[in-house]
Image 1 (spheres, one colour):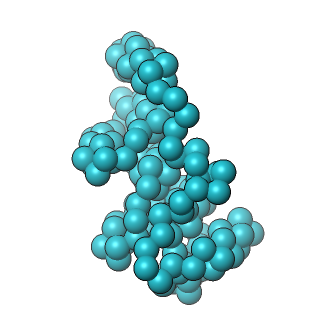
Image 2: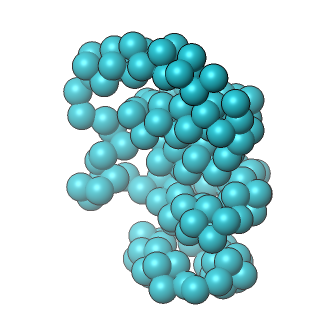
Length: 156
């Protein structure tokens, strides 16, 4: 099955990568927008991201998100989701994603990439998130497609 999925997606992935310039998602690392909404504090979100890097338990990630609730932005949400996924808590990462959507956090492509990565074996959910990302007018990139291919491989 993996060979089938690879054969199916590899030409698409090469086409996408070769026809696009630098991804807007890369602007995040070069000081671009962090998905702010009214009331967001970039310095508080940066502080949250730094504290997330130091966490040693998934419960600490969730506590930090609760503590910084009003100050979270897309960058902080993506960081928290990635940390939860590395702890093996993909389901919790997807709950954080859904909670951010209902709270009005502006979700960028990095947040969707983290959500697709958290889907694990659930390739249908990963595919649905890709379509949602595209419906919102966000740009998918190589990270998006790699996460989707990984979900298809695991879900095989």
